[in-house]
Amino acid sequence: MKTHREEDFLAWAERAGFHIDPRYPHSAVLAFNPDPEHDRFWLVPDAPERRPYFIASLLECMGDWHACYVWRHMGSWPRSAEPSRINDVVEFRILEGLGLPIGTNAVVEFSRDEYDKLLTLLFSTTIFGWTVSEDLYVVPNHGRYLLQTDHHGVIHVSFRSEEDMNRCVTEMERREFPLPDEIPDPTFKQPRWMDSDNR
Image (cartoon, rainbow, N blue to C red; front, side, top):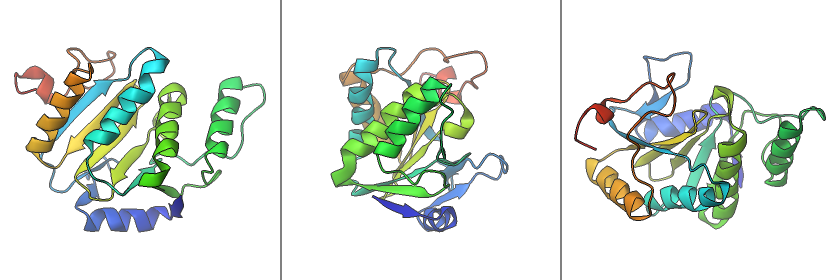
């Protein structure tokens, strides 16, 4: 596992064809530049025992990556946890056990050999990540995809090509993770693709 300064990661991301979306300058929304608008989201399964397979399926859909960068774009990795907040204690122990740069805003790079650690981090985030400051961006080194965990109980994936998007949608459906028909809650902004038959 390697760590990178946030500004170094963003410089790499810009060279790889990403940018901070100028429409949301205070939210650090990472997007393709230009954005082809090939985006989909999947609901995180309610059953926790299905979540590792669900997350692994999305990571496998991202193809032949050798490393993935993980950016906690609206906050830092926690420095500690209040003993009275038991959920925070459990999450902190998981993050600490993974060897994350506790108390910093560093971007973490997981090699393919550290796939199990990346999977564990994303699994933990689907359980404990209930605010925007805990959402994660996951960017593979080849730059063809952009995965984002979301405190609304979904995982978004953006695709540089429509071909990759369609292949992933088909594979996820084959694994019994179809695209949702409804948004997860009333505060979730419904994407344009849900209004059409082009799913």
